[in-house]
Length: 136
Image (cartoon, rainbow, N blue to C red; front, side, top):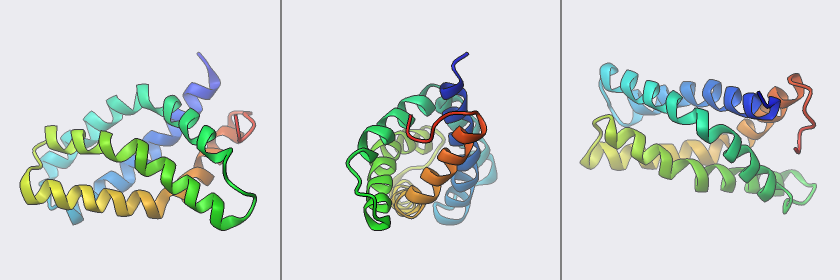
């Protein structure tokens, strides 16, 4: 199996299972059963999405300047544009609707904006632990 696929998938599952639980329970107000369903569905969907997201992020990050602000902005843009639409489908299928769905999406967008750079750094760390150059 491709090390980059495994690294990107492991990073995505670990990082966003944690942030997903926080958002679904505390922001969207979903019941624990709905949170469990969303996280199981999310984990299944993250397997085919992990590597494509890694490639998407790498492509966008090539546009970043070497300064911190530019890297934060591009990492956040990558995460929001790729993950929020997928997340919307996950929580809708898991039972969020109306106000809860809207709040969940707003919360996810805020989380993705805030977590863009931390996730980018986490992804780089996981890739490095797999012996993969951070920007590949």
